[in-house]
Image (tube, rainbow, N blue to C red):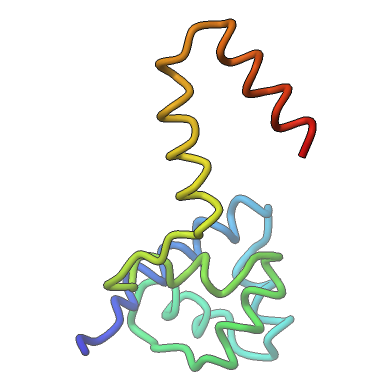
Length: 109
């Protein structure tokens, strides 16, 4: 496994912090660390532990996955999303009358 891209993770943290209108000092106080440590995390110079990432996510009101989503090497698609896409793909070729019939059948289920 390749190392995580802590620079990209830090940039996402910084982006989210700014979006939430929070300062590095505020986040640092919540984490009980020095503001320079938050700056180092955001610049990718410090590698936060999983515990720290969870705490940052809680402070910034998002999931840890928000910071890590670009780090996955696979994409797991939800079965329901796949079915929705397949159904919509078939329906787009139906005329209005067939679409109406399908809608009535769905409502009967």
